[in-house]
Image (cartoon, rainbow, N blue to C red):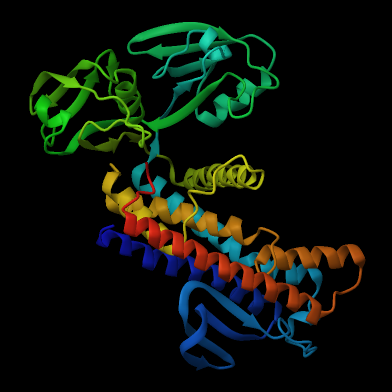
Length: 441
């Protein structure tokens, strides 16, 4: 892990500050008395009092809190949380998560405004043997052009059309290299777990110019004569006009020597690249190239930017909720869970391999972490915002309040469990770091 891992410190500080600011503003809106606005978890390092509010910095740098009157006591003073309606309390508890979502929308909108709207392509990344896709002749690296007569706009669009055609023939137009192929596939109604209706894994990439940023010593890329600055034009039969087809074309030619066309200055050169097979401990090919991309995007009118920011954020949020559901159902591994230390390691690894400018990579990481914080905080577990919302919902069903001391005890137990879980995760993160095991394989 390099010094770039420290980028995560201001990112996490920003996310916590925004989250707690949501609770703080909601408290002010409803006249709830704020006792303390804390960054980090106790014990307290120092604090500054402004009016009736204590602003504190605390020792454990893995969270934050807004402490309000009535949250930990039975006070019925006018500014107490206990005197507010169920709706006001629900808004107060949910405000932190919504502020994190709002931050993600804002950052996504800024990225779209600065970079424009990328032209996205969907590719076949994996084909399960004896699946409908295999029977239709689909191959790794095929790009979706049309599905059921409609141009493929995104992976989400492709999946929706496929689900609507379950059990019925669906015409699909693919692009394989420069060759357009017409196929017909019948999506399954009840596919095996993890295979999907057609039996493929799909990946998406934005149209871009792909060039060499760095060549590792003693690698296949160095042996082939590649140099930093070379623009990748074609690998075998596949024009390289985005990162998706770059990775998939290498996968298609694994274990072979393939002609690689590069543009060096004003010249186009043909280089023979020997592509190794995938190592058992890795999920991708390693030819010794660090590549970068210049995304080719179309500008959007100013009035469309907020809508695009909301749309892209909603798509990311949807994927996260699906992933959380899979995790809770035991369909996904817990091995990728990481705490602040692990996220720092992940930041370092992502920056090392990302073809994007550093600020874009960090902005995208901030968006993902902000939405992740929002989703996890709304999980109905004691001590989390979702757990407190659950108590409000139970109260609404019972039509009478739960004793504050009983609710407080439940949240205290939940907090202790969460704190223990955080320390276990930190222990795992440190062990992974000391062993040199990467998070990205």
